[in-house]
Image (tube, rainbow, N blue to C red; front, side, top):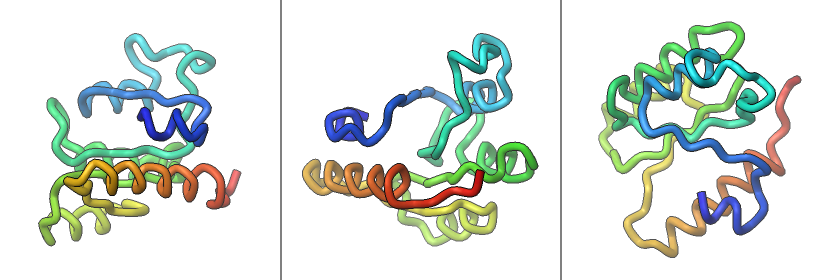
Length: 125
């Protein structure tokens, strides 16, 4: 988040600590009912290893919903397992990135990721 903010790539970043909170946010439930305060994201960075509801389940629910499926979802995780990669793409992830261990490489990945999805990529409205 710091790298995206430092490089002014995103105007608003929302961090949610578990899969249930992510679903509540996307479906405007519980504390996230105010659409002005909690706008629909332009892109979702999704970890696979989330408490409560795991990332693959969040991805499945999101991509099955006709109102939410157009939001690009980038899996950003430590898992390099072929099974996880295959499952993510079979559930219509838009990209799958493995977090580098080296901080400088991770920092550069975040800068490149933000520039691609927020500046270069064109979305259908």
